[in-house]
Image (cartoon, rainbow, N blue to C red; front, top):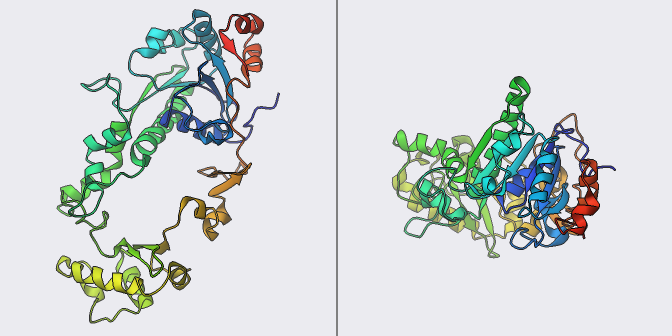
Length: 386
């Protein structure tokens, strides 16, 4: 059988994913995008797992799917058998749940001591909140990230679930798994990768902590260079009710911004760019200028320049943006918009992503490959296929 993903630097690696939601599945999607064979072990009910049904479940793309009832000891034995031939396992349960099910690190290592065991949680494996429920917004709230985002005088603004779930969670889990795989090659021993969103989101704030410690950042939201406080790093409305994003931090880029906006130098002197006392007036000047033309007009003016200005587009529009389209950063596959592969590898051409499998599509094939008695497992309802 040809597996869904056969190309990439992780080709030949096998990852078991115990089905969950959000950051764990996204991390495994990324591993699949990079060529790993990801076997997702779905639940019989499937309820509360997939963020979207069927082919719309982008986080499940490029994977194989089997369905096992992990409340049954025979299903646990099947997972442990699969682990014997795997390089990594990913779970996103609360601390202690995997152990109670019988698929914790020690049980897996008794079969395969080289396996890397990835644990994806919000709060981590220990600490006063480790056993409590949570979601992205709470994790980034306690790190200071949420409190730093939003306009001056207004409430914190929710940055989707990018900073917590996927930035502070998935990407750190993948990084940890890859590092642990390298060490396992050297030592023959696997280890637990404890990827906690609260840790990752805190780590992402490194540059903000640097600015805070050097006196160049204030705890007052919306008054800093990167949080919209600086008028040259902000968003402005256009004549048609759309928006342009401005990020002209460096003096030469700021000067180019003013030139292309045709701003009166007496109202916005380049040398006063970082004079905070001038920021309220400068913001008004820039707002007035952007309000004179449409987003399309300004996009044409700034296209190909170093003024660091870009149109703010919607999710559906993004696929048609010339640069995004040229790189395939957003693609349409089987009528579904989804991100292209990232990062890119020179030795492995980027192809169209494989469609997400129907849960249980590969149950029979995967269990047969592992030498298990598939018919017995299916007849007892321990394993399920569509």
